[in-house]
Amino acid sequence: MDDTALLRLRAAASVVQAVLVWAGVVLLPVLWVMAPAVATSGGGVGVMGWWLPERYLVPVLIVALPAGLLRRRPLSALGLMLAGATLCAASVHGLDAGYLGDLFNFQFLAVDAALAVVAATRSRRVSAPAAGVVLVTQMLAAFVNVGIEPVDQAALTVLAVVAAWIAGNSVRARREYAAALRVHTAAEAVTAERLRIARELHDMVAHSIGVIAIQAGVGARVIDSQPAQARAALATIEAASRDTLAGLRRTLGTLRRGDGESAPVHPVPGLADLDRLVAAAGDAGVRVELREHGERAVPAEVGLAAFRIVQEALTNVVRHAGVGACRVVVERGDQAVTVEVVDDGGGGPIGVEGHGLIGMRERVRAVGGRFRAGPRPEGGFRVAACLPVPPEKARPSGSRPVDGDRDGGRPDGAAAAVAGGRAEEAVDR
Image 1 (tube, rainbow, N blue to C red):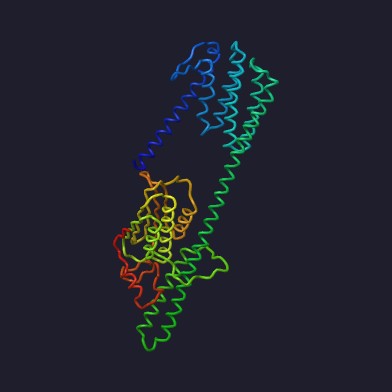
Image 2 (image 1 turned 60 degrees about the horizontal axis):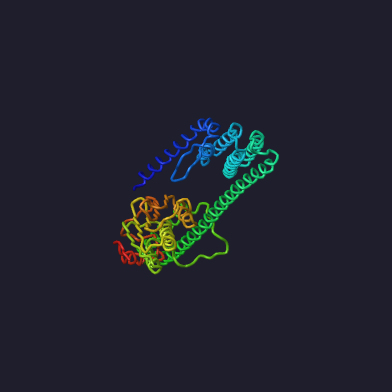
């Protein structure tokens, strides 16, 4: 079943449920009129071997049918249940005092439960007055029900209403605290990921500046004796400086690097390093089918973002998916790099995101891309990202690749050797 059919089925089920709930509400006036008439009736309804007396069934339906509105309209449900219970207490006068007492206690116990739902889903400014109305109405109803001793019932009424309100309010407070904690944790995860991105971009900038310094020295020494080599060094300096400035302009922005940390000397990873992620996942027991399409070189920051997305997605597969294989598809297009990681595992609720998904989304946002992650309708989990490549970053397929930057920016053709050594066909491990 595809996504469209699933959404239509859920919408139809929601409509049917709403129709049934409001149909029950429409029946309430009929039940209110029937309640006094069936109080002394001996009739009933047989359901699956059970005999349900009418004198109990009708009052139960009076408070049960409005309960269907508690999820979306808790105040309306509470008002209808309170009105029904009060009408029954005032109009039902059976000969059995025990019956009247049981009816009163059951109906207003259901009203108290509805009050707890209101307190759990609405603010104190709404739930506290509602609790006061329920308390006053319940105490007044005890005076018109001949099966209840109003003075003795008052203490139980106060205790029940206060306990219901406190229970519901406690649930609401815990829910708000959990939501605030999730927001705080997510904000911390975003901040940590931004710092991590800033550190890695700092490493890339330091690496590029080192290359520029070396090539500037080479050009200064050979500019008189070897003009061609000097021109090559200047071209390398120009390319490295443009790449670095564009990366800073597009990504750093508000990111800041932590204090007291030195930059490592190794180059930042990129798309050329995906093979080692595949090998690491294989060592962890997950066979990765890696498919790479396209030969266009990409900026270092885009290659780094794609590498980190694949790394985090494979980590989630190893830890949570519970499967032995997954598929990674990377496509280098003319305008963007698309990354997709798909597995056939158990998936997970889309509304519950870990720090890994937050970090991946933040990386994609840092380079101006789009990110999507969630369970697939046919089963499993899918992570997809689209990372744009600016037009000025596009290079012919035969030029030195920028992502990965394995050769440290040397102008001696080592980068071409690295690029030539990579197989561009699909890798199935």
